[in-house]
Length: 169
Image 1 (tube, helix red, strand yellow):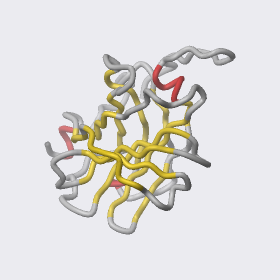
Image 2: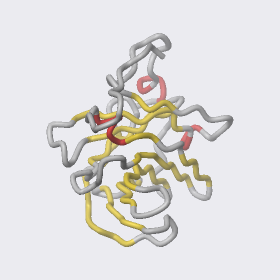
Image 3: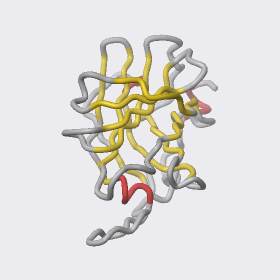
Image 4: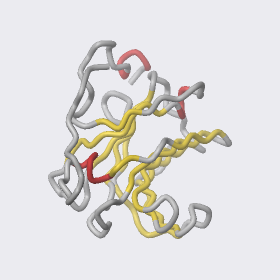
């Protein structure tokens, strides 16, 4: 799809009932993440999450990765990634965010509106786990703030308040 076809119209509803919004100062279009949201929780252990961007752009064909990370930002985490040109998404784990061990494959694709849609395994994660995203285009990398995974997935946990949509973009 061309950039115009993938751009969400101003004033339109959020793309999902719960969105973790991201505001960046200045970033290249290919890494300018503006939100993370859930698309499908039919399988609660493997929800489909999406990463959206500020504007539409032609997808790079190589050296481009968009990832959703879940777990503990200071400890054990899983990275589920879309990799340009790859037949399937990748799963990796790390204890420090520096050294990554391959742990399998996952579904990952460019969605109809230009978002990146990734199936993320969350079934073994404890309550209180976090979610964040990264986009890497060559040497340029953008990492989002960290959000509550339980809130993004709409899971009620002791002591946590449920989330709801609050407005339009």
